Length: 172
Image (cartoon, rainbow, N blue to C red; front, side, top):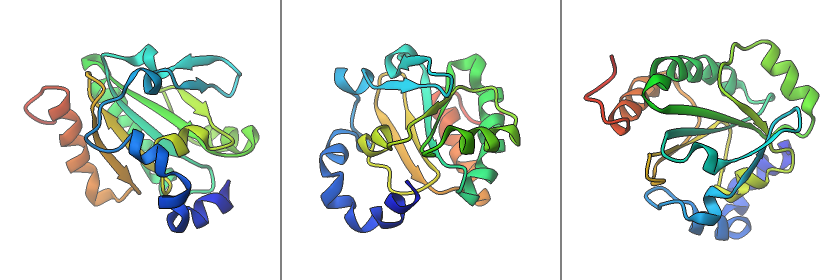
């Protein structure tokens, strides 16, 4: 998987063109998009549609990704702060091995669900180009923002965007 994301930026337009045409910023998720199956590390399966009507931050990450280590505490903070308002963080690991994902998670405090996408199929479907990447989806299924990378200086504006999408005047 590491190799795929190393060359993905160069192949992106060719390799995942169909996925990008389906799920791009500003588009609205259709029935087949909501039907995406997410699998937990324990093998339990859920569909993205189980979270329909909520504001979702669909986060793609990997244990080998340095910025992901900095993003996870921020994700936890957002989940704790906004979950009572219908906000859900759904984390999707693209690690090939469950043990790599598990080792990473042992070092992090997470209250949000974590899923495993070892072949990168869900990441490819959403047109993910790098790690970490977040897809902010509003209550109606509109993709409000696709964000690649994590820099601490972006945290406040991303938090403000989440608050706005939740229908609030700003972060508390």
